[in-house]
Length: 536
Ligand code: MSP
Picture (cartoon, protein in one colour):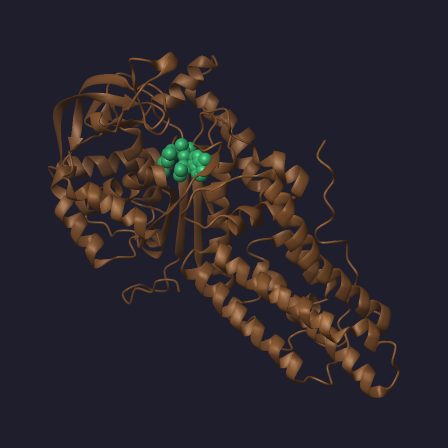
């Protein structure tokens, strides 16, 4: 449920964020994975009837972006504008991402508030000036410890490498401003203990706790050797460290320092979705920054695993970044949204395989679900001229289907809505689809139809009503995952005139039986999941 603060005027929004992505390159499957997961989660909560806020955006400052722009002979701002408008925003539109806002860290609404936040910390004595020397990975935009570096081999022999990017680190020595992060270790540990749900999954929580227990170092929060960033307000020779700038998007985008009402009604986040490589920033640095400024902490930081190619994290720098459009062209947008959440346990790494995608598409989407929909709508047309019949012979077999729906709905709601176990939640709905297919095979309406007795005709009507009513529920439960297909099914069941738009159907009400009104106009729509073309 959306959090309700008793001191608030109304319920606060269920607020979910994605990481804001670096725009040094175009998005790949790994980026889209988290954004789709957040979209399914927020669509789910919206369909529970809750107030929701879904935020995504882009991280545009720092050395990595600056260097990419230089290499392409344009200014960093030009580079970012182009990538955001031509690559990132169009992809989210293409994938039907229903975000409520899109924040760019180069926007004034963000930069002004970042300065205020950092100034507040400075005024409170949380920031001091000092020097630092250490290995820095520009791809991570992070100082590394010597212990975690890898020994280079081959072309990198004799060099020390970033463990994530497998690229040489650079030695940096600078006069910087530091945030007193080390002081927050005990308070953070106390928070993790008191709120075991704060970091998920469990393995991620353990890793962070162990890291914090070892003792935290203060955090360098400014850079002075380049200028592509937000200026330190009291010393404009420095720009604010890109991660401090970036993390603050979660506050600035919802009105921090600008729109108190919106801020109170949204902040803090219910779920920060992050990749496991950026967990420490979100589970250590971000809460410490909030504590230092007296702001409430997010409820959960949930880390997802990586999409892997050949045993390595898929990435553009490894040249393994596959563009989502390469897959949507072949499988369609809905199947794409479905596949990664269905096939990979959220929180664990998963490998992408074209063969696995094709196999699941054919067996679960086309055969189990798509066929069910086309068979049922075709039979209502064939035997009842497209007018949904009543179900006068509702008996034990039908009650079993209705019970199956109650179970699937509760399970999917718990798994997707609460536990972010997307694979488990989707499986619950597809188990129900299997159950309905089994029911049809057993009841064999095509045989019953041959018998013209009133009893047989009553059975036929009941079987088809039951199957159509089951499909009504599938359209609702799968709408957060596959909105286009669900809408097609909703239309072909003729549900809208009586029940209203699909998006208004509430999840908790889905299992209430017999919502489709007899007489609804059922049309045999196009195949929900057409047979796949052979890849060229
Ligand atoms: N800009 C920072 C995030 C700042 S949030 C305040 C950043 N950007 S990123 O573009 O490099 O990565 C964004 C997200 O994409 C991370 O959560 C990262 O884990 C995710 N992924 C990048 N490659 C990935 C895979 N191959 N698989 C799954 N997610 C991966 O870090």
